[in-house]
Image (tube, one colour):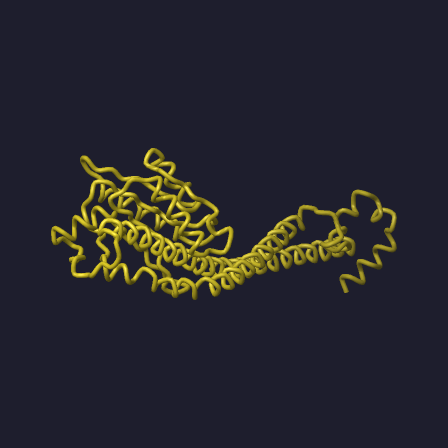
Length: 323
């Protein structure tokens, strides 16, 4: 009845209603929010609608990144599990002695080149700094070899003077043993060490990784510990064939052990990176969905409030015209 009265009175007073000043009262109800000009009432819904669009686009990106990480994880995981058989014989022969006390320590920190993978890089850096504190002391020297942009960005701030070598873009091409062995050979040629301590994240599952420190000793330290009956077993119990001396064999063993441990560590860390990225992107997609639900509720409430206000104004105007 109010609308019929408004139309009837509108035809009677067509001239004043079509004047520029009164028409502004009725314009919001006659023009849709999509096509009409952005005014006081529909600016809030426009802002919410734009934000909903942004959140929806971010959700699409995070879902796509999760799928890409899952695909990469499947291709790396099998190789990482197979590579564990390379360094296990060295552990049985030479042992793994992280608590051995030597003068020259080199910490090899392995991280990723890209972010958005949770806290695996921060964990590696924290473990590296903790190892540095444990191995520091009078007449001792501790240096860093960094693999990956993320560890580089964090360690350069605090330990720039202790960094010997920085290697980045390691995972730009598919990882293989030849590539890693060349890097290991370069590290052995350019740093002096009594013990190499490789810090990486060992892959356990998509949502779990274990920070690990693997220790590779120099041939001199291995021979010294073996002869003194230290933490390394008696190497003389093994028969040596050929014309090579014990020192030459230990040198070859140390180089091969370091390249094998490095290869496994790089693959394990790559698996942990992709698993952490999958988990992070899944959480991001879920959070985006929850935010989208809240924004949708806010948009509907704002729109309903705007419609209610317009109806009240129309009814009030009709009542005023009837009066």
